[in-house]
Length: 344
View (cartoon, rainbow, N blue to C red):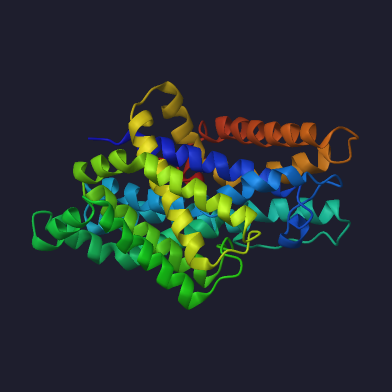
């Protein structure tokens, strides 16, 4: 049976990514990581950004692992690799050479730098990671698939039928952060921290779906505790540690937010409709395109002498509107669809 809540969570995660990237343009440090920034910073945005940035990318990795479980149901190993190559690797390579250089040019134009073509993975690093995870983990995942009634899979299902199983997951992420020592924790893009964290999240996301109904019932039973503890740890991070909390505490907070989102998502979002069908198809192309429209919108809006809050709304609307408009064109051109991860 299809899990529509996973489709919704993928859409929401991409939406949060877009909003977060727009918000970076209103932080003074945004230019340091290659964003066009407004001359008017909006410091108040940092609090919700700080809450989001410890779990939004890990959530995408979890959801990607969940998605592979369903992709494997009707595919052999060869069919899965072929399908992931067309849907992930090809858009990554195309985007690195044809999409990312566009927003780099806009950035260089705005800051009066020499205009030259630069290819780079940019924000598409996530796709490369996912493709590698599929290649590396597929032997294990297909073993699970072929032996769903075997002792290993039954042990996984038993483990994740209680909250104690989640302590194993938290422990794995804590070990990663203790060994790699990322500073800051939220530095995922093209780092060993981001790669290993993503690998763990992808694998455990697959295991969560593999665990079936008992895992979901456990999440629903404990959802209010998860979200309460997550909010408490975030408050502690903000007011006591000043955003410099120890890595292991950030891991716990991050995981609790993710379990909360999975639980409430399953309770309230496990249904389909025309809105989900449209957004689910559009989310991937929007992710690939959004940085170009974000930078273009920033160039157009930031010089205007208007309140910073209005600037934020206008850049967000321009980015989303531009992405959806171009998506409407792309989805009607058969040969273009494949470069944006859409079915040919």
